[in-house]
Length: 90
Image (cartoon, rainbow, N blue to C red; front, side):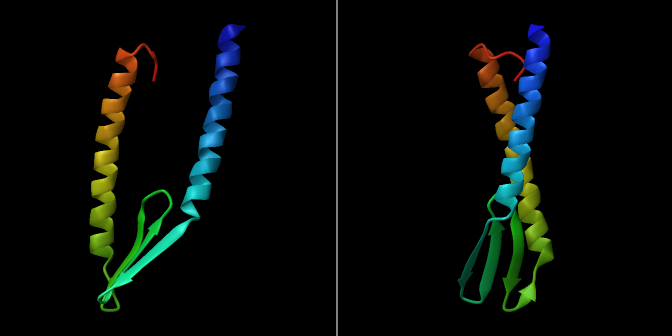
């Protein structure tokens, strides 16, 4: 029965994480200076970059790809450190 309880708890935590992610995606911050406008979401994804009124999707996509890559590396390192501390299955 303990395994079933752990599964239920894991599912509950996944649902909470999903809800929090959706909330973060709805938070926006806009930065403007010297003809540059950047819109970033609460989940740290770049939503839009404009330079002198021109949409720069190429820059937006490049930044998001770079952030995605570094996030994977950080997650891998943190997972390893947590396992070394005795948190199995992280």
